[in-house]
Length: 359
Image (cartoon, rainbow, N blue to C red; front, side, top):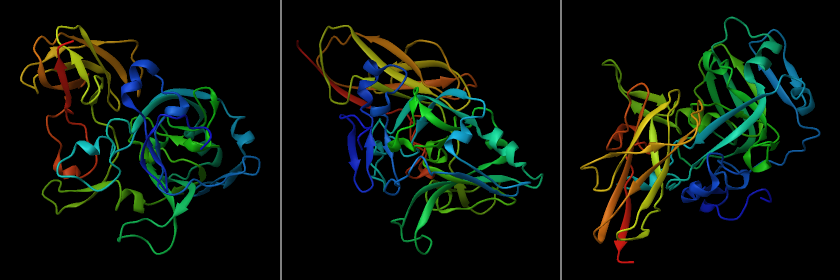
């Protein structure tokens, strides 16, 4: 992966799953550099010739279309800043240990994505009134590891309800932070679905299928789903969709040593799917008391908001720091993980343990 900078944290190989060193947020700022953006692969990356690559759109449409990258670039350009987070990010904080990639804090990143609105491409094909979902299919393919799986190899694919697919900020992106979309991040074209967990932002797009019925593919029933009972009905598999409110502490890093009596800048980020961050609070005593953090910079829809908090540890010892975000709709991070969500949607307050010692 020549377009990946050193410094990413290796979590798995074959395929590679690489974590952003979240403590670097203070240096990198609100936009994650391409080379340090986390990588989540389900199968080995496909080999794609950008000159011959084509995107096809089929299914419940007036006419199927096939587009080259140059064709796609003739449509109006749209740029949107959006955070992508793996739905298993922070899985390493769960007890007992859960199956899946053991992400700590860096299974996420925030970038400026440029491309064409998915709705524009759908309009070009003429979507039938009977259509209810679209399926985004990547060129990456392989055999899933879990026992409950389809026969033979499958392509990575995920669907969106038509109403979500038509949101103007949902993009087919061919640039990342002003550069051609790197191969490692889905080049030449990937979906960007702001406000959703990143399993919906399919990489290496090769086909869009417009459906007249709901899609129940592997990556939204076996993977990226959980059991839930609603309105007294028997439990059913519920696909993971939108990002809940969450914050994380970037500095201090886990097990960092801090000088007693110093003025320490606690620093981090907070985000939510479709709502601004109203406040962030920080606790240095494991959640017994909380102080208000200062929000930094400008707020952007679907991006994280950076924050800081001045902490003055006077006594030596071990401390547990927590951050807690509240969005403009009044949703606040919970203190504990919802066990119904299994190994996904980990947005409770995450403990960062540090040692305060004499300078």
